[in-house]
Every structure is written in structure tokens, then in C-alpha cells.
Amino acid sequence: MLATLIQNASPFDHTIKATHILVILPKLERLPKKYNIPGEETLKHLLARRDIKLSKICDEPVSANLENGALCTWVMVDTTQSIFKQHTCIRKAVQQQLIENPTEIHLAIYGNPNQQHFFTELAIYIAWVNGAALPVRKKKPDRKSLETIVLHGNKDNNNFTIQRAKAEGNLLARGLTVLPPNELTPQTYRDQIKKLAENEGWKYTEYDVNELRKMGAGAFVAVAQGSDPQDAAIVHLQHNSKKNTNNKSIALVGKGICYDTGGHNLKPPRYMQGMHEDMNGSAVALGILLAATRADLPLKIDCWLAIAQNHISPHAYKQNDIITALNGLTIEIVHTDAEGRLVLADTLTLAEKQKPGLILDFATLTGSMQTALGTNYSGIFSNLDNLAQKAVIAGKKSGERVCAFPMDDDYDDALQSKIADTKQCTIGGESDHILAARFLNQFVNDTPWIHMDLSACSHKDGLGAVGSDITGFGVGWAIELIQHT
Image (tube, rainbow, N blue to C red; front, side, top):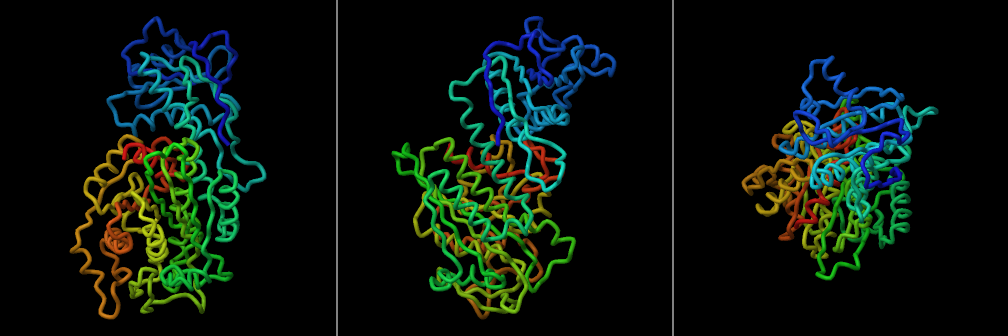
């Protein structure tokens, strides 16, 4: 739940009783007298004692207790830096406040009118995203959620609708991803999604394993059949804004593997740890749908979630199996731990059949993407060069950075099979992130499509605007892309 926002267009009044104050300034060499910021003398003494120039608080915020006991944090935003760096700097400042578990934070925003408005949008979003505590199962949680944000020096007549929507979407994605695997099974996940759909007015349809088997969705069923109970399903959610006068439509597709053992190609303990997070792509897709709904973006969204587990059992699929996907393509199984691309294959086919204007799919798909980029960026692939360029630009504007990888068809040589239409992957795993994208490309036909391999879904101590290890990466990026595509 996000903190309540109280807006006050007047500058911060020194008579206001506040226990936690965050001061946000433009990059300056000295403070103008007209600002009269909270704790100005304390800040000057602090910087002098540490021999730090004022402008250095662009890189690292500073905090101190004022005479009345209030914790005050000061930070400057350098607008010549990337949005990612601006997000990071403000997030660090917010975290210095949140470390004391306050129920209320006051934001004092300074600068010219344009700066004030811009800084406020950043600060409100970051305070919302980090102020809400993620679910834990401790008797005494380490932190509690922020209850109130009091904004001084600026006001938005739309109540920062887009920032709230993105924060709600990000929080949903992170909150689902951290749930333990015994709590978030395919069935309980479906139950949660159905309840969310009822609350948000989304049309809800699901295709269980029996129905998918009858439909011929052999790629999805191959993965799902190893689980007991067989509670996997492809869930379809639909939302159409009343503002969608241009019949604009997109499809969101998410990998929702609630736990990934690797199947018969069993993962070692080191790589199985954290595999309850392998459903993050579906959580991100859900978060985007929620954000777009709350922001009432003028478009139709079909959201397709491939929800299953990858288990080892007598019924589990195995190496050298030949399976038939929903689009009729036969697939030679090479490695049972490359299950994500199989559940996505049939889900993409269902999405493509409705001929959306754009397909965006999200998946924690390959370890090779993390090898290529680390966890600072996520990788994207597209079947259109101009769409890939728009994706990179959206990454820069949203602060969720992406890197575009090649999609040349000569990579397909590695997926040629002597006994089926295609291989699922190669046994060696070289350039697997690219081969996975080339494999998925066979299921979207000519529909404009972006595949995001979520290497940045988890980053130690947070990334950009988000201070938790689980980042919710992709929600902010997608909303930025959708608004300008």
C-alpha cells in the first residue's frame, strides 16, 4: 500500500513540526538566500566539518539531526546526469530517511518552476516505491511501510497519477516476486490474479493443462506435465480503456515459472537458490497492466501469463523428446532447464493470434544475459530495428536501462535439428540469450515484438529508483515505451 500524499504548494515553514525532512535542490555551488531551506546552518557546518563542497551532495546525500531532533537529509539533483543517476541519488536520500522507520516524511523541493516540478515527480515516485515495505514472514519485520508523504513547494492537479500508477505497478511486481514458493504455487497465483482482475475490472480467462493439451499447446504442456498437481495454466487478462478511440492495442506476455528445479537437468544448489523468482516476468507484465489501468492509458491491453513449475518426476519431459507447439512447429528438446522459452512459445502464439499492434514479453530467461550484462541492465531483442531503438530510448528516459542485442537470422543455424523443425537450444549454451530470442521469434510472425530478458530483475542493494534487491525492472520502462509508441 502506498503512502498517503498531502500536497502543500507553499514552501516548507520552519514552524512545521516534522520528524523527517528531505530537502531536494538543483545543483548549486552556493545556496541562494531566497531558498531558506530547512537546516541550512546545520548543513553548512556539516559540510565544513567534513571539508565537502556543497555540489558534492549530488553524488552522495548527507543527513543530520536538527536542533529540534528532526532528521534532515539534503540532496542535489544534477539534471545533466542520466535519469538513472538522478534516480539513484534521490533514492539514496530517501533511504537515509527510511532507515529510521518513520511514519511520515516531509519533502521540501527547491529550484525554478520547471526544476521543482521535475524534481517533485522523481521524488514522489521514489518515495512511494521505497516507502512501501515488501512482504516478509518474520514475527517482527525489520521495517514498516511509510504512511504519509507531505509535499512542500509544489502541487500537481492530477495528484501525480502516472507516478502513483508506476509505483503501484512496481510494488505489485516486487511483492509477488518475493513470495516463497510454497506460498505462490501456480494455483494460488492464479487465485490471486483472479481476485486482482475482479478488483480492477479486467476480463479473466484461463486455459488449464487439460484444455491446453486438447488445443495442441505441446510446448507448454511438456513443461507443466512434470508437476503434481498439474495446476499450471495460461492466464489471459484483458483491459480496454474508454479513452482508446484509436483502437490501439498491445499484448503483454510474461513467464511465470513459480519454481524452476531445472527438470531432469537438475540445477545444483547454488543455481536453484532463488528460483521462486523465475515467475518475475509474469509479475512485471501484471505490474504494467495495473499501472496502465490506474493511469488510464488510452489503449487495449491483453496480458498473457504462462504460469507453471519446472519439476522433476516420472512424467516430466526429458532430453531428446520431440514436442509439437501450438503453431504446429516440432521442437527437439535439448535441455530441460530451458523451459521458459517453451512456455512462452505457446503463450506468444495465443497472443499473436489476436493481431495486437505490439507484443512485449518479459522473462528471467537466460543466465547468459546476466553473464553479458550483469544485473545493471536488462537485454532486449526486437524483430524491428526502429522498435529496438525506441526501447533503448525508453530505457534512458525511464531510468530502467536496456541494451539491444542482435537478431540476425544466421544465428538460426545453431537451432537446426535433423529430426524436428527446430531445436529448443544448444547443449553448450553459447550465446543462449540470442538463441532464445531467435527461438521465440518463430512464434510471433510479423507482429512488432520486443523480448526483454530480465537480467536486472534482482540487483544487490537496489538499482536506480528502487532500493530493494528485487527491482520490479520493466514496469517503468514499459509505461514510458507505451506512452511514446
